[in-house]
Image (cartoon, rainbow, N blue to C red; front, side, top):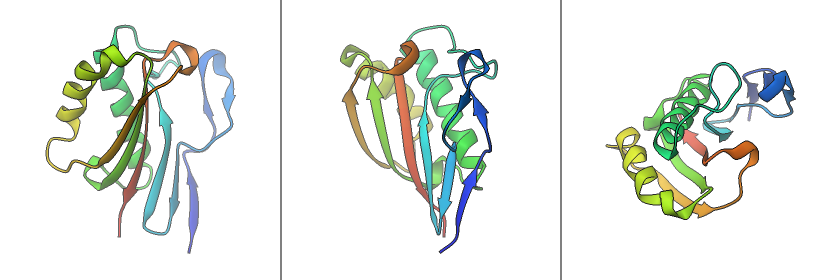
Length: 127
């Protein structure tokens, strides 16, 4: 089985290098590292859970594209919410991105890094 580490070196807030690959392709599986609402400038996007969920899922899409995948290839997602009260708003936005193929999902509440409101990692399958 071949393994590809995709995305090269990424930087976070303040330009610090991040010690992980955005995506790893292992055979037909693609593992996307946890994504948060980091904009192109390396800072969290302003706004609440709705804006952060949209940006986070756009970042998931970008990481999947590194392996030639789309959201339609996602078979499993794991979600961490900073505040359980955001669950219904998060769910509404999430459903816009996964309107047809709905992957298996786990969602829990956790204290997240750098004031993020949501973090999402996914596993995709591309034969």
